[in-house]
Length: 197
Ligand code: 5GP
Image (cartoon, rainbow, N blue to C red; front, top):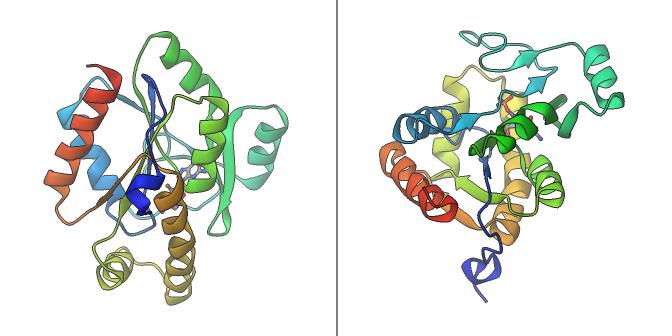
């Protein structure tokens, strides 16, 4: 049985779309393109304990918080899902999802596979889309360009082979991101089809 046959779509008309892409797959650019093609989708901004990278802005790229605040938010049930990824906490605010679902919006989450499976459990109609890098070499180069340390790169590449397995087994659709424009077009047409827009 091929991986494509294994991951059959079982959603109806999910208004949550999860995009998971191992680190260095071009996810940030992809989300920007998707937003251009589908301006009505809303993109959730996650909370993280990771330090901001150059050019990253608080409340736009992430809500950057310390571990104490993150743990308090976990206790208060603030997150729809949270996970410990590459040595830092990341979480999706539940109120953002709930408010936008009420408005019948399509909510896009770009989160890791652990978080994605938690979301799918809570919101079974969630559409899961995975992005894979064209090659290990290209993925490594992207991470290097972004200024990650060698240790971080090793860690992220190791983790991404675990994530890749989950993408193949549990996600509805997967794409190899060879060309950002083409990948964004393919993803947007799936979202349009599945969500009936
Ligand atoms: P980065 O630090 O490179 O921005 O993200 C590292 C990983 O954390 C990526 O796989 C990204 O998708 C994931 N991530 C970002 N936000 C969240 C979130 O809110 N929840 C989960 N579970 N993962 C997230």
